[in-house]
Amino acid sequence: MSQKKEWEPKLLGFLCRWCSYAGADLAGTSRKKYPANIRIIKIPCSGRIDPLLIIRALRLGYDGVLVSGCHPGDCHYQTGNYRARRRMAITKKFLEYLGVAPERIQASWVSAAEGGKFAEVVTEVTKDLKKAGPNRLFEDEQDGTKAAK
Amino acid sequence: MSETEKKLREEAKALLEQGRVDYIVGYEPGSLKFTTTPLITKDKDDVDRLVISPFMTNNLSVFLTELEGKVGIVARGCDSRSIVSLIQDKQLTRDNVFIIGVPCAGVIDMGKIERLTGKDRDEIDNIAWEGDKAVATIGGNKKEFAAKEVIMDDCLGCDTPIPQEYDILLEAAGPLACDKELSRRRIKELEEMPPEKRWEFWKNEFGRCIRCYACRQVCPACFCKRCFVEETEPPWLSPLPRWQDNLIFQMTRIIHVAGRCTDCGACELACPVRIPLRSLSKKMEEIVEELFHYKAGADKAAPPLMASYEAEEAEDFIR
Image (cartoon, rainbow over all chains, first blue to last red; front, side, top):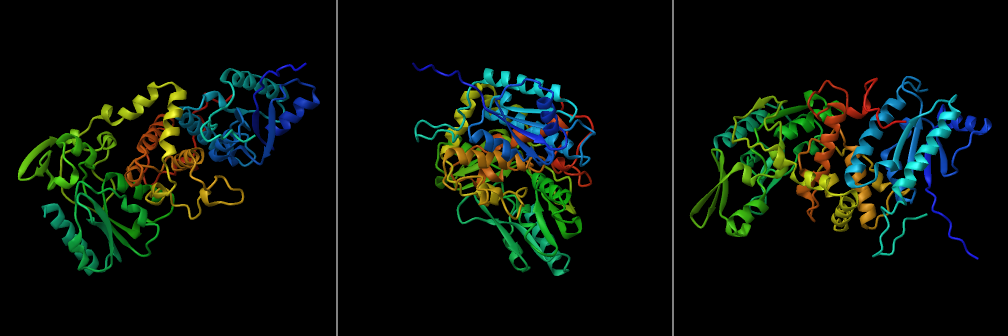
């Protein structure tokens, strides 16, 4: 008896270690429920994100990428999140022009005290990704390349 | 030899003779018809080879980060913006460069000329600007074309054909055709496609890419000593020229040069398989303008786009 499992999106989260990562921790310790679709990577600051990392995640077959950092004005290093914001803005627009669904590239500001907001963000992003469907951007039937898992 | 060319040679010679510059960087005729090749020289006798032509396809400012000493450089509008952008990025000091500004009438697209005349480029004897018309001479017959018909699409959208930053400016050589709509024709076509078709389009284009990196080598904005494509730990890209990695290389490159790229078109003109790279770089220029009201290389005192920020901007996509 085999039952076909429903497709679940895979979301890669880059979380700033000073805020969003602690926010995710708080969501856990305060027993907030959020979808298990997110895989989290701790980063030193949202300003660490090179657009290449986002593109690389899509190449590896993630259905979406979430970059989450401190609210404007709250960056541990003063300006990292402002720089991230510029980078994310152009990356999102540019990839959309190339044909990448805008839902696949997500950003949020989540502070260490916002466990609830973190759970909300992940829930909404997962919903968005279900709408966008599986990421087949880099698959190629002709040369038999599946997006690496 | 045109008046402007004569003046250019005189100026270049004087600069070298008086020791005001160590190098002159300009264009000389290429080995093929309707091409130019960069001329880099310390020798005042070489300057007689300098030309100004409608086929100046390189952006010479790419050499500025490699040459030591003071450099006298021939620059059009887009080139001068590239120089300013290098100064903004602290790759160059203003004192180390002497800008010989030449107004630009746009780079002539040989493909368009061939289509219009129905002749192969080998059959055409000469192409030159006469007033605001491009004149092609074929077997003694002259054919006139409006500038708008023959210059590259993207050049039609140029706001700065005359250099904004220069030490001397040679006289206006030609007309300035402008047609914003035509200049973004390809971008518009792409924007009207559904996203899947757009991706398919780029997938096909980059299936041809052989990853020679010519686009990167001719780009003055690509001045990194070490590029991510050559990193081996971790290997960001497979060295095999598969479309996936080709496309990732180019999209990352375009994002990395955002705010530095002046859409000079050197990358597209250097591409051996003719991938329409300007449809990417021009779009990026538009995005930067729309989001941050920033124009690459417009102000040498301004901080570089990606190294600065405003407290409130472009927030609508962030949750």
